[in-house]
Structures are given as C-alpha cells and as structure tokens.
Length: 372
Image (cartoon, rainbow, N blue to C red; front, side):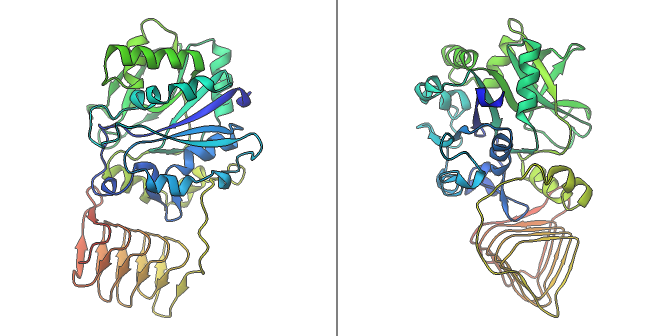
C-alpha cells in the first residue's frame, strides 16, 4: 500500500530557531548521538515503509543537508525506481515571514503535481521518532478521512515542546483544532507535523493557503479546514523528540543515553540509515575513563567522560573531564578542562577556559570553530 504514496520531508519554518546550532545549519543537519543527522530518521522511516520517492525540502543554509543526503543511495532507496529529490525555495532567508512550508511547496508545485502516486506522507526534518508509515496510510484509507495527522501524547508540555503545535481530539479521533503549545498544561497531544492525505487534497490546501495569506503554514490551513473536512488523528507510540529549541535538543539527546529508551528507538528490524564516514576506531589511552556514554569512531580519549555524547574524531586530552555534555565532531578538549552540561560545536578548541558549566535545564553552548 505504501507504494501508492510519495514522501515529503519538510523543513522548519521561520518561527523555530535553535540557539547557536541553527546559525550554521538547518535542524535536519544537526548531529544526533554522534553518528546520525536528524534528517536520517524521517528518510529512514520512509525507506523502511516502502516509500521510495521522497522530496526533501531545503530552505536556509542548504549545503550540509545537500552533502549529507547526496544521491540518497545510503538510505536503501530502490535504485531503479526510487529517488530522493532535494528541492529548494528562493525565499530562504532564515527569519523571513515568507520562509514557510506552503511557500516552498508552492514554488515546487509542478513537481508535486507530476508525482504519479495517489497519496502523500509529509514528515518533518526536525523531529526524531520511529513510525511505520504503511500503518498510518492503511489507517487513513480505512477511516475514509480527508487528512490524518500523527500525534504523540506527552505529560511534560510545560517544560518541553514549546515551539510545537498541539491538537484537540474528540472521542472519534477527530481533530477539532490545532493550536500552539503555550506551556500552560503538562498533558498535551503534540502534533508531530506528520500528515497523510491524497495528493489532490494536498495540492488544494497549498493553493487555498497561498490565496488566503502568504504567512499561512500547512498547519494553519488544516486548522481552518477542520470545520469543513474530515481531519483525523493517529496516535504514535514509542520514543519521540522535537528538536525545536536548544533545551529540547539537549534533553532529547541525553535521555537516549538510557539503554532502555534508546532500544525503543533503535530496532534491528527498523534500521536508521546514515552516510557512513570511514575512519579508524577510537583510541582509548591508559588514563581514559569512560562511563555511560556514546563515543563515535576516530576519537582520541585520554581524559574522563561520563554520561556524554562524543562525535567523530574528537580529541580529549589527559586530565580533561566531560560530564553530561555533547561534544561534536573534530572538537579538541585540552588538558585539565572541565565541561559539564554543555554543547560544544564542531571544530571548537577548548584550551584556556578550564571550567565550562551550564545546568541540565539550560546547557552552555560553545560556538563552532571557537577557541576558548
């Protein structure tokens, strides 16, 4: 059944900004658990669900996404029939009010219209979860609904998911409204920005939204259409993270250090594909002490690491301590440096700042290429 759907991986709009990290790359290109990029999750979900025609929308700072996705061959897409297409939009200024999903779809409407599949499944490049889209599509068709939304029930919406939408669902799983999460209650149904509908309905929504307002997003137009169309909700179970703030990115990464939580996301029968980087194994010296951490390949470890995520080819010198932190690829941490509750971006070099500490709710961020 999934063969009758094509996939769209959407980009975060102008209302979402992740402090620091977002200045250098879109959220889809963020490093996740050292060896993955965030965009690997939606593309792998589609590939595993038998969807082999995928459009990836890229707006601001496209280079890192383009380099990582490339031809898409590493996502196990059928090379004869399948295809990953990178699609760009001209209104790509990161904070522009015109930088939204409807604008991007409108600019590429001819390509959407040429897709020969009857259905479309749209998933965001800024959320991490595992979902069989065959099940979503089958449930959508069986219900006879116009649109089906994927949602996740959370009990910590006051602290996290601040930039997300929420949905109001009735007993028949009908959606009556889509709102912003204002952090007013813990228990919320978080919209996962994942939609299933007929291609023809999707095209009509793009046209309607463009006609009503240049600022309307897909969520905005569906919220308006809730009164006229049959919009249903499909509940997602399992691990779910929305990386729409620095705190959410840090919290979501850190909780996956827990083996039980990680094993819910990573299953042998549902591989998460990524572009592999060939490098030597990590070298641990006699002085190294590593506990409860993810360490990627190519690193040189002489210091102490506890409860942290270490990216590729990181150097941690003797006497350095990394605790509850994310150190991204190619960073160098010199002797005697203590880092706790922090995110250190790629190619940063920590030499003279001997004590860098944030707190678990508000991590310290060290810029890319920075020397401290």
